[in-house]
Length: 443
Image (cartoon, rainbow, N blue to C red; front, side):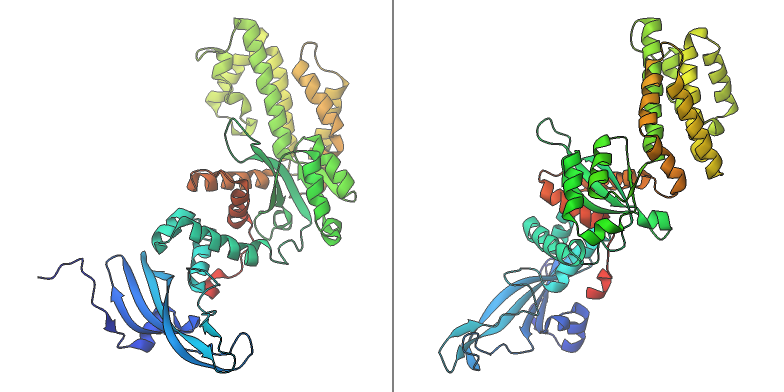
């Protein structure tokens, strides 16, 4: 009985035409001469179908000199690798005597160990199927660096550096992103998102770029590095409460409108509500909240919208606010709920008016001792125009920017972390760049 792990002996490819088509080596300018099948891989013995016998020096024709072999990794069959052993001629020029190899330019890029089809397949796996480089390399039975370099080069060529990738961008979002969680080194980058498809209801947001650092100069430098046509086309910039991004926008794209989106406004008010609750908790108990303290138990309940409260939760809130010492928390909670209600108002004009009135009332004066609410009033008044601009420009929320951040967190988990920001930027643009031609058509 033969060993089940033994390969099928090298045999001629009896149905060569069918095998060429099945293995897709015909598009590489190769034809299969023989094959060998192992449990974990298949080896195809090939030769080029077209000559490369023009002398690179003098341009005259050369003749056969001898034969050499090169190995390539090709498209896998299922999860089993396919290896090509290509036997190609070496030529000698009849005129000048130069000897050169068949360059196999239709098979792979110079010095590449992956066929052109294999590189396209790897790019598809990374971009469309969200596979890690390690997983793709394992299927191809190739080194991580080989696959990474090939995917990066092709991805930059056809996706990241595509001349049309930044066309039609009218609404952008900007935010910070923590790309690594370490004690040393700069942890933050500035991410720039295309929100135009969200505003126009034509698709999803996409990552435009990722720049090291988080400051006014970082964002301003990125804007100024773009073409004048790009800057002229930017109509709206959605951002959080960081004034550096606003200043950069005002200086680099002065004709655009800045919008402080609801996501960050509500988050800002929610932080002030939480700070008020914690301060009152410390004043009443002399320390941090414990699991049986009413204010600590209600920390999540306080951030729930009124319209989403159950009857049981309403009873809990009534009991919480019945305590006179919790009055400051109740006042801040009321502001938080009113801001949410203004954003959720189906009548945008009414919502704008309600929020404008609320900002004025907080700025005019708050109960004594509510330092958190007073500080909130100053911030909202300072960014009043940016906050209210949301109602005049629907679909400009920076929420999709946070969604992109979530996808990048997932990417980092797939790769088990990144140490190199250059690699992280490239993989992030491939993961969330959104500009994806029909990759399948190249396989």
